[in-house]
Length: 453
Picture (cartoon, rainbow, N blue to C red):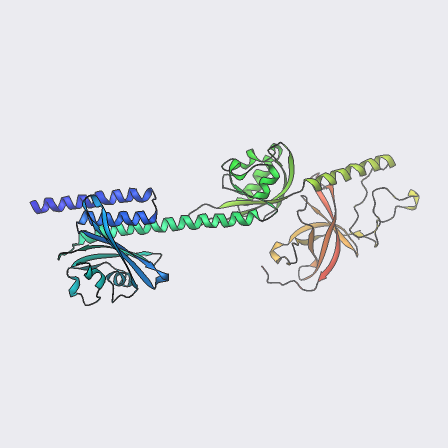
């Protein structure tokens, strides 16, 4: 009866110790302190007098074992440290790590599979050692050591194994969290190094982070808007509805498109920005985010509006009621009919005749000297073409200055580089606002890699 009672008391102590250590891991102390707590706990509960932890060092070539005396209340004293090669023949911990299993001995001196002279010189007669692995890589071992002969039972070994598993899980979580923090810092450093605005949102549209360029433009720091809905914190009210549709498309991983919106700075100033959205997959187990990038187009828009206003005044002064035809880049305007008697204001003189070219063709923004891959091309409706350039329509202000134009049928495309030289506001047949973009050809690409991605 007394033996059963003692057995029940031991099991209760094991369970209470496991619960206490589990709570300790949630508090996330430093790993060094957590390992010290684990050593003190197993030594106190099992009453072995000695306990220690082994850590793998030098890329797995060596191990460092620390053994301490465990006194009343789990207090540690007289710690001893020893570095040795990762040799399963010369160390009990190395043997456990190599075999990836718990090692128990009732008489250390009688062991033939390994000879641990460090433990024997400390007066250890019996021992229990549990290896700790992280992502299948040896990390260390937790051991309890007794100066007297002792046979450790299955429940005692199971108790130390549970503590070791909790320790390994906590170390894995800390490593994952630290790696995530480092990745976020790296990503933020990259975003802060670019001139474009970059803002990451969660799936509910709340601001997670904003780069330095965005903060400088809008006069706010990232912490000031983090956690707030993007639409409410930074977006002009009139842009809320189109942005909602745009954001849903980004979440659905549809082909990224541009959306021209007004962002509101801290001082109330509006900045016209052409946004693009992309869904970014988060680390395993974490939700994805949406990355918004864009360039400040306020000055371009202002100049475009001024140009349109000036042309409207010119047309009104000359009595013209119709919008003059859009000039292709690098061309002379088709001269007015002889009956007109003089050039029509608003036309720029072209060096080569243009002709109507209202076909769907492919274009891709050109950044730097790197040619765009085939999957970056998208369709536009062209307006006119000449030997010097081409004009096409876009639904939003372009956020690029150079472009690659693919002309012809899909089987036999010719690729040309071109510079944007003119952007003017116009209307589609259904009344939608569009922008007519004039480009001047700058060269021909003899071959675009068909398999580039």
